[in-house]
Image (cartoon, rainbow, N blue to C red; front, side, top):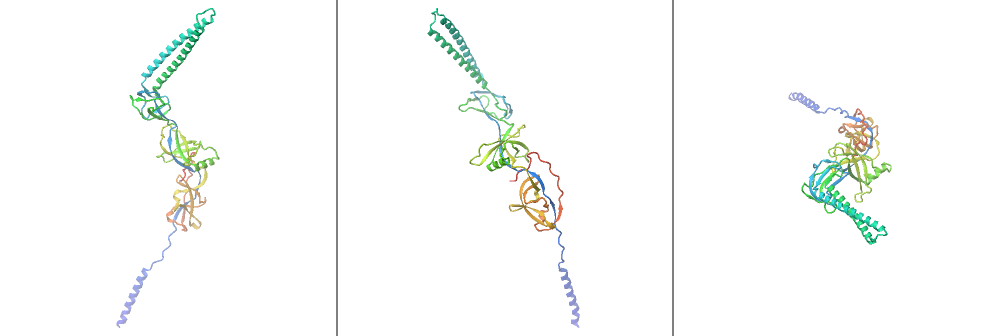
Length: 395
């Protein structure tokens, strides 16, 4: 009777254990839905590739102001750093010694003129007497002496005229005027100092003037680029081509000019050639010595596909995009990139116009994964850029 009483209890315990074990079994879960991605077709655009180079601005005219004659500096007629025009008075050297020298030269000239007048009159008198055959008042030798005296007096007069002109010129040189228009630097000598002049020795530097408007920009580029530019122009001269400048604080290439000079030789040591562009500078924004970045078209415009730059992925050194293939399956395409333009990356090769490129949700996909596709609304076409205002080449 005792055994039979325990059997129901064992059976109940076994059922309870089985029930608990059944509760611990995992239930089969439903598969997650495919990730949703946004796709868009590549947009075609007309692209111009650009090359960029670093260079600096140089003045068309740069003049070191020196005195032509020595003397004490009497006056300064400008403010350091101001704009001056050609012919503006800059410095005055003490004029008193040169005025005295001019007066003395004029006096010597008057004396020479008087001597010439007397010699001319004396010669004419001798000529009259010599022509009178009945007169013996003058000999042929005396006539020749008076002729020589008249010629010497004429030569002396000519020398004194030159001395007066030289003294007048020295007096004019006491006032130094601006030889070119531009911005003058600071004065190098104060009033009261003795300045050396002339072309020999070491004349005193008084100031430096640089022209401002227009201004030039000099840069160098390699021989291969030169050949590419020339062949792109069918062998024509590339001077006159439009160029653009960006200063160190500029976001875009806003300043436009033109290429006006290429050097006639390629440097043998560096394999580069010097180029020069000119720019209008009415407000004086550009200054000689200032650095900038110049760009010019690397070739003729061409048609290319563009995608949002966020759609570009990287695999080591290669670039790729994800595209949606048959049955909404993700595939990877390796592409060759071009410049970045208005937030869109130019694709030079590797992409077809009908490809559906993943532009949003890249982190949720990988090749072979099925996705739910949501097509992006096409953006309005951008306004046509101004001449030469395309994006710079990616380097």
